[in-house]
Image 1 (tube, rainbow, N blue to C red):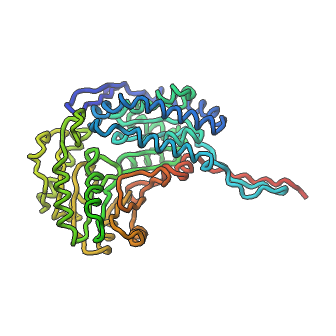
Image 2: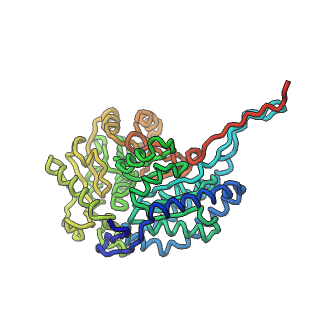
Image 3: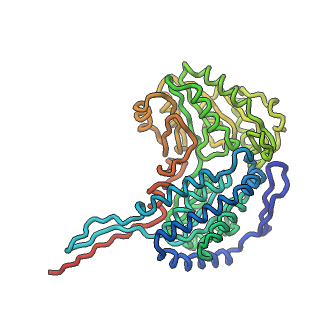
Length: 463
């Protein structure tokens, strides 16, 4: 087994960078140092922690000109989209702004006779396992509130995006974060599991695949370590019979195709009220056909390669299986010459005549493919949406908020959208159901996940 990790670019297969793996002993030493640094960090005033974290975010933003082409090289995202810093700043600013309120004691009684309250205390060392598809946004969701709440952080990034972990650690170090408080070692699966089994962490936040989530839970079994999981998705859209059709097409296609479909809450299946089905499909096909697949370093490219060839192979396999089972593809691959049928560049596809037993409508595709089916009414839509192993988000499109509320109450999902999709509001809890995961990030609830409650019951007067 090699102790060197290499990242191959999806652009041309070249090696972008290599990094040595952190051995278990060295990783354990980093965790121990983080635990030591955390004690003093938690004792600092909240306002000081907030100010330092905000400065770290500003310094990360100053790197954006370097980060954008770096993301193109390592995960294939087109440079025209400008990276992730807008969302990073939005989420960090919001979480910093609510910290005082979110972490404030809950005072039950403050009288001459009794003091009864609940406080929030940091877990200690938090392990953040971040994915490659949004390496800054997904990491910041946990890193910022964890640090503000008084925790130390061990940030494990995916192989493709180790540079993101290094940049985050460097930005906060330059801002003056205490040595050892935020580290980003290069950990393989075995080392990570060994650290978890040793009860190295007070809390673990994992974003990744369902299989990865199972591995984390198995490693943590019996340690009683808290675990937050954001896992897979097969997020649906439902276009109701009173929807603004142009808005629905634009919103849902973008939510399905952006970042080559490699989005945690990207749209992967769409149900359309039967009277609107033909018009929706016609407009969606035209919009998808207009994407330009190519080198993500070219500002004219609107669709880059998938992050790895193996991801592209899975997308092609699901499409081929669906077509063999009767699905009809509406996008001519010849219009996307960059797709050679074997590499990381995958032409987008719109499939009709799909059935819900096809893998492309059941399994996570995580690529630029949409299956679209007509439904007779809300009852059929709800039944087909809920007939899934996943439950991250549902995107409803229509003009009646009351109708959307009634539908949303019946949907087995973490978030219900109306007339939008694929967006994380930092004021709202990011959570999932079923195989989409458990726990909650962002919002006040995000702070509750990254701290533990302590109750205080003082009887001041005796006799």
